[in-house]
Length: 338
Image (cartoon, rainbow, N blue to C red; front, side, top):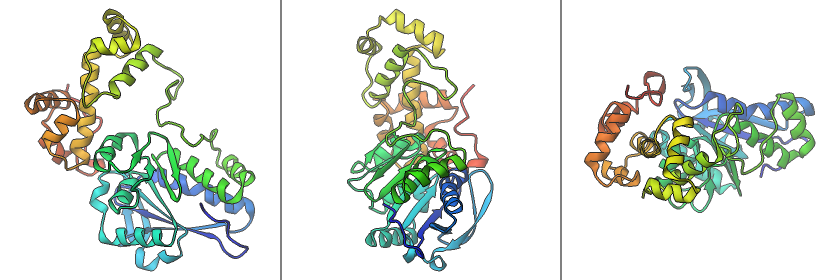
């Protein structure tokens, strides 16, 4: 991973940002390196925010960040090149960023992705036969587009010289582990304390832990088990009777538990999570509607379109256009049909 530099050699990081990148995840990734420099009293890490054109880059929360143009950023010096992107990463897979990533790979630099950055690495052909992760909202799309890359639901993944994380606070976990690998546990722990990091999560920790919700509430184990069975069978849906057999409940018991905890019938919940998967594919990929219908467990495209409009208030063809409007101008994913 990041090799420990000598007295006068700091590790060089380049963070390539794309329009509408996630600002919080990006700064959360960088801050432990800042803390490590401060605590050690020397520059162990240097970094630059870079982009293809340089200048101000608009983040998804409306804040603009100044960036250095690739050609002025000393990209050949980078020990690590991390891509931070969010909505529509495929629109930012330019010739320039492909070239920078491939040149970094040839130098054996570490390549990373934050939030949906792994899409750009994969489009550049640099995640073949690796395992990566992206924000959970984009996992299905990534799996459909890049079948030769393993997809993990972990918060962050380090696979040889590829590092990816799902964004948000997981960026901090990944940064601290990189500091630990290059400069030891004492400095990584000191940096974690300095930035008031919560208990750092281990490699392989899931984006959605099975045993608890963030604020401590949780649905009964049998409901979670039923939902896991449904989520594992989206393309070829099971009958509710088959779901009941998997979790050892009668149809009546499952209906009662879902009414109490989910406020929907099991059948309606199952249909809705298939449609949620479909919406990710509609708005995040260029797959045809028939391919998306099939991948989401609908045998009829007419039935799929009708169900989609019922859930989201507009047909999938229209949602494909509106769902690609820049984040601050659109209602998705909060929009639901009344």
